Length: 150
Image 1 (cartoon, helix red, strand yellow):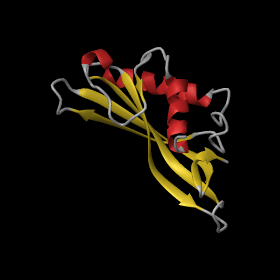
Image 2 (tube, helix red, strand yellow):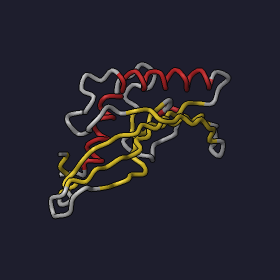
Image 3 (cartoon, one colour):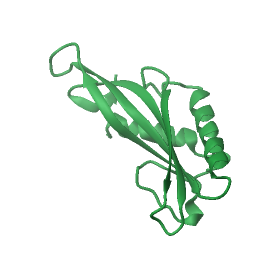
Image 4 (cartoon, helix red, strand yellow):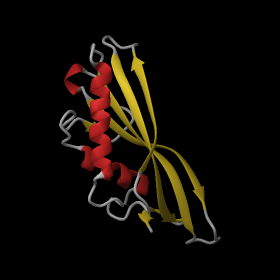
């Protein structure tokens, strides 16, 4: 079975697949294809994670706080900021109105947006606008089994 991080990423990708602007172009990785036909798109990944526990032992629950990042990528045009903002609104709405805010009991609380950054990737043949929304998520696993959410 896969690490709970992978399960969370898959659940978020499933929730975001089919949005009006990005459709099926949702990738469960920080690496994604930036060809014109793949834009606009979303990349979903987990970044830094803090782990703590209040007990000691093989099956001690690990309290995990992680940064879930959703990277929005769109072609750089004169309406780039409007496009990025529109996709961010779709993402925030999809996450915020998910009928199951624990995503199948993987999370202990609803994902909370904590940050948005906007940038340009201009080292490519055609420039791409990027907006990253960071959600703070909380989940628990047993110390002996990172594939089981508890």
